[in-house]
Image 1 (cartoon, one colour):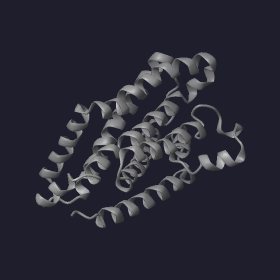
Image 2: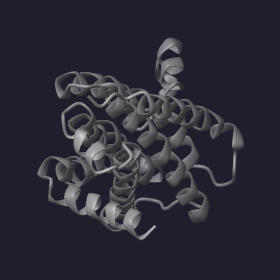
Image 3: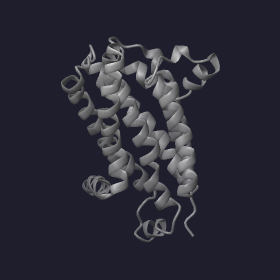
Image 4: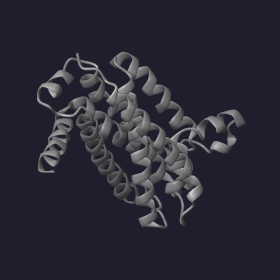
Amino acid sequence: MRAFLYSVVLQWKMDIRNKDILLIYYVVPIIFFAFIGGIFTSINPNSKDSLIQSMTVFAVTMGAFLGTPVPLVELYGSEIKKAYKVGNIPLWLAAVNNFISAFIHLFITSLIIFFISPIAFHAKQPENISLYFISLAIFIFTCLTLGTLLGLLIKKTTKLTMVSQLLFLPSIMLSGIMFPADILPKVLQGAGKMLPATWGFQMMQQSSMNISNMYPLLIIIAISIFISIYRITTLKVD
């Protein structure tokens, strides 16, 4: 257990020192939050009611889809994985460490948005704080399972960039964080419901528990974990 905790802390410190990861987890989401938050609240004062949730969805989806898979592609898609075999280290450990480290980073960024929004933009805090953070944790977990799956399935960073954008951009445009989703055509509304951002955004706005919003996220988690386990167990190390 001590060795496992040490490896998690080591991965977290490595991410902090990685400028690209630091940009995606912290710098870009917070700059976007500061810039767009001011615009939203100036144009539409009612946006203050959901500003925390919308900016959090942006930060989490960006970090999970554009940041989390990168270290995994660099490891599993290269000869580095041979070092794990030589050191008798299970390959799944790298994915788990990366997952936990990313969860901590994204939760910290979400906390920054949560505490700064009421001060900077007079944003409304969630009515049920406990439920908000439970929903946030589930949402981050879901997005990270998808991000981890991308990192395990894709072998080249160039291809990863395209696939990650195909998840990230629709998550922003179809989830309702930029504008009400009900103004979209029915086809696009249906497409948005296939993404965790839509359900995460709804869950974090709840004042009471609504289990129906959680089911799609649990399905995504189950499918992503199953495929990820299969991928790791069938990964060849020559």
